[in-house]
Image 1 (cartoon, rainbow, N blue to C red):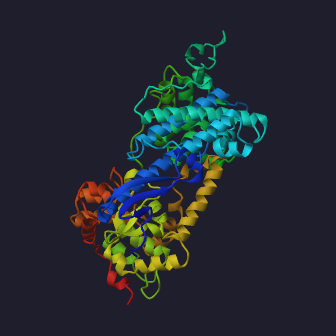
Image 2: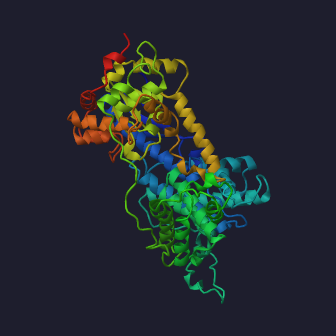
Length: 582
């Protein structure tokens, strides 16, 4: 399994972590590749490499969140309302500065120097002067124009005079941002923009004589709707795709309750209390059960049913939908769109009782049933189902982590074969290295990986991975129509784990509540504790650590130490000899 280590570069005895910058991100990052020096010792380089990879990927993720080219979808301005050129210019400039802050705060050693591409600067100046051709303008600044076109804030066709004028304006704003970045590289944090689109005050809305709430207008943002302000809120939060989707759904449901898009200054506490009452009557899964209906229509349709569907739980109403609105309105206060937060104190009091039994470990009797023939017949090659259960109990991975493991993420570090958990994970601490347990090696994991490579596969569970990806694409497409992407991070458990929970476990007699696919992870955590593995190592192996993948070295815990500790893990009822091919 030894071979080339992904992203590791060696030249004349010196080592670097190198990641190529995707074409669409180069105008933002300002480089064709990101490099981080690792020194001239291969052993030290291998120790530092995982953390360096994480830092460089964080730089690219920050770039994606600013350009709209990553997983986050651009929000749409309500129909009939286009952003002004000044609003778009300020939005782009602010996002550019936020991105620069994210780079400098990422911990990447080269984050404060050398990110200005002089070729890009020359191209921008050519656009500003109007000397650039349509194709040159499109290549230089077209991604910014397209971002606002997709949001519904621009209605200009490429190649038209209006499009060229808009591109020239955005190029000027981009140059302003690059000037600030260059000043920051020199330690000067006092620079201010000079372009009129960034300095001239926006026309401030004034209340009409009959508008009793007019005194709540404290800036131009006060007259915008929540849907219009939401993109800026999400950009500052660097929210995950799932959280972005929840906020979009939250705003849409609230505006459906109000009956029309409403300027934020007109939102009152009475509105929030009325919305809370409506949510308590809202049927669960309303979008699926009443497709095409607004929130009030779904409530009415449900109440007309002979047997109404169950309504949202109090905890969901308070901690999810009301909490999302409260967070957005608090941001409005912090950014001078509102003088106060009308959602303060609006919540549902409830008793914490999920009504569901907590997940529990499988007993030794359960394990004897689970890992028995005919499912685990050593005379036949194991498939995705068998390997999923084996790796889950001996590596403790979450289902979404397991489904996304690439074959290139199963590699040797200092001679130890590891699972590198590096795809989309629950949080940054979830990215980690897990040594491969000796039981998995004895059962032929390396042969399984070799066979998949030979077949041209890229993932350890190719069928499961593609099922989750296909479902995710459908959900993302549905989110723009019906908001169904609220489960955007929950697609992988819907397939292989669900089949095991619904079909396999009941069939073999494991029917106790609280015992499902996730119980393999519980067995792993309990087994580590019983084996005497220290809490620091247990937390790291289970993804409860709060640092980068390289943090295990920062605590003087070697990968070989982790491997030795993990190999102490064993389970009563799981007869590995009976599973090992003769």
